[in-house]
Length: 275
Image (tube, rainbow, N blue to C red; front, side, top):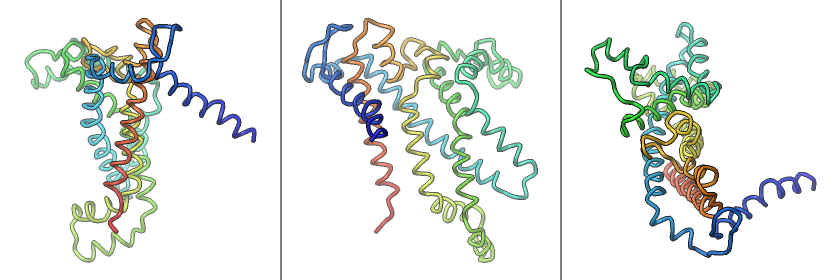
C-alpha cells in the first residue's frame, strides 16, 4: 500500500493533472477551462509546426543512423580475435556517461567558424571556406545530429554486445561450415536473432529523440532562428521563457506522448513475428 500510494502521488496524479491543465487556457495562473481551444491552436501555431518538423527530421535521420552504427560496432567488437577490443568498447561507450553540459559546450566550441572541425576540414582541403555550423539552418541540424549520434551510439552498442554474447556460437560455426559468407551471416542470422533487442533500442531511441532538449538548448538554443527548435525546447520556452502558458505547453507535451505511442506501436507491428 505505501508503494501504491507513492506511485499514485508522484506518477498517476501528475499525469491526470497535466491532462486537466491541457484543457485550460490563459496566461500564468489565470487559467480557465477552454475545452479543445489549445488543440485547435496547435494547427495555427507556426512555431509549433516548425518545432514538430524539426523533431521529425531529427528522428527520421538520426535514429536509423545510430541504430545501424551501434549494431555494426557491436558485431565488430564482439570478435574475440580483435586486439584491444576492451579499449574500443570503453572509448565508444564513454560519451554517453559524459556531462551533457560539458559535451555540449565542447561541441559548440569545436563547430565554431574558427573551430577545430573547420580547421581540420580546411587543412585536408575538403572545404574551400569555413562552414557556418551555428548560423546556417541546415548545417546546424547536421551538427545536432552528429552530437546526438556521438553521445548515444555507444549506449545502444552495449545492448547489442550483451545480446551477441548470449547467442550460441555453434550457429555461426555451422553457417561457416556450410560456406555462408560473412555478409549473409550478418543479415540472415545476426539481425533476426537480435530482433527483440533492436526493437527495444529503437523504442528507447525514438522516445529520447522525440524528447530532445539538452543538446539544442545548450548548443544552439534552438537557433539559428528556429532551425533546431524541438518540441521539448518549445515546451520549455512556453513555460519558462515566454509569458507562462501552462495549459498550451501541457497540450504540446501530449503531442510528444501521442507520437511516442504511435511510433512505438508501429515498431511493434513491424517487428512482430509472422504467424
